[in-house]
Image 1 (cartoon, rainbow, N blue to C red):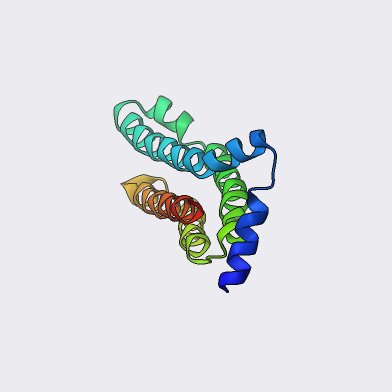
Image 2: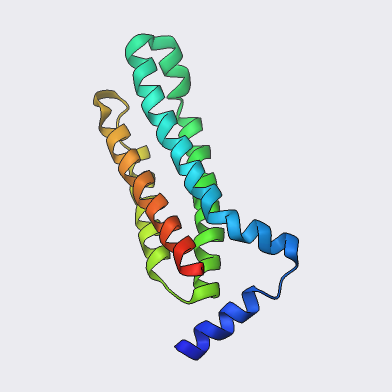
Length: 138
């Protein structure tokens, strides 16, 4: 296992400097995207309470489906890259749990705040997975 992890780490540093710069910030960017998702969820709920038409626009299922698709893409790239770089599965498992909770939240009704609560929990767990991945890489 140690030989395998060191081989993977050595391989990760053989990329061009520009690629290494992007790769080193990928998980941070994904964490920031998770934060934007959380802000969107809270803002949508608040706007829904203040103005039904504005809240309805932000609560359009298309935003959630596109956002989840982007989160899944970043999850696959960022967390999957981590497995190859450091060899640890835990960050990907934690992040995948968060993505699963977010995916399940899409199916919940928009009223009552249940969807928002589950989405925020999923986003927080996904961000934790990306943070674990970032920490394991360095």
